[in-house]
Image (cartoon, rainbow, N blue to C red; front, side, top):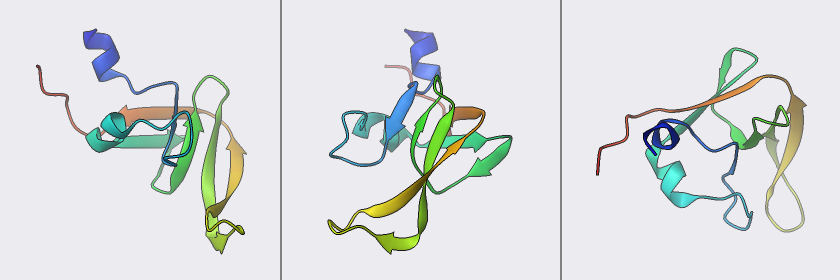
Length: 86
């Protein structure tokens, strides 16, 4: 359990309509390193599949959601803060 609390999930999304959305995990603050560089505009990531989705500028689709680009490479998610023991 302690290891799970220290490791972010394999896949996570910031879109509330996604099945991979987890508000509790996002509230802890998840950072993502992609190919060794810190990314701050990640909309969704998958560690096992090795990709991230980032917003493509300010463009929006017809439903008002940001258009995204899927980039492939090494993904390293981490928590920005340390979990408080419950």
